[in-house]
Image (cartoon, rainbow, N blue to C red):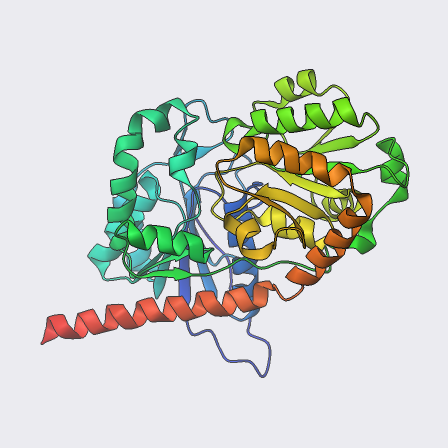
Length: 403
């Protein structure tokens, strides 16, 4: 299915559109995950600057199209076994070739490396289109928890390296990730961080009525987790930590925002906790701001947007020392950082936070200050720079081939 929309006119005084950008992704807003969130923010900023966008993705469940996209190609999808709610787009080289011959973009950004992404990569190279790829998902960690990925794990790492090395630039969100991939043999890896809406995520959205619903008094500490309730987010360690907290400090509250296959087990093991399901927009902002401590035991993130959202909301954070937390948190200043392999250290650090509520408040204030400089506008600037870089590489190769 191909749908087209009219590009909005560039506001007076601004430069006209210079680049047509094609996004290729298995996930897109309003789906709720880190990849879709990042792409949604980038797309919005690009449209506001007058860029023309294309979108290639699996057919969404509601059959909708994105009104901000000029040309959209939707393809059939297949579910990933035992990974509820996640689908892969099927290969579509012939359709993509016709699509891009009719609507040739200046550069292609591939956000996911599944069959659809590989099909797009092969087609773009065949048509001489510059390609930038994004490393958004930590497949090494995910493959420990899902049957199909476990089976494919010996092949995943070399496949991903070959995939990304066929693009002009591979974008990752942290310097740690860039160094790790470079050491493994990835070429042309660049860091493009993540932005943040500091007005939406702010302590000003704290709601006394919401805390009352949680049965939390003014001096009651509330732990918050936002994300998928699934094994790859290290829920077993979450359960251990909060069980020990509740045993020693029964007045402490815990709130979970999100859903997933481990929800029933969490409800059984932590019957005193609140499970709010998915929350969005201003309501999500209020949940963040009305808590006190953000607890995040995941070891599968490439970045972790929820960490920066929690920090902006004035929450002290406890997390492992990597990804966004490792880049933005100084241990004891904005939260507690724990060595990547130290499960007991995570539990001990969680307990230590409950013992010093004044320090929790101070760390929350410091966390807010730490992330105030993060903006999606500056991240979009970086993104555009790397797109132009890919175009320059492609042009140079074309000139060499004509010599």
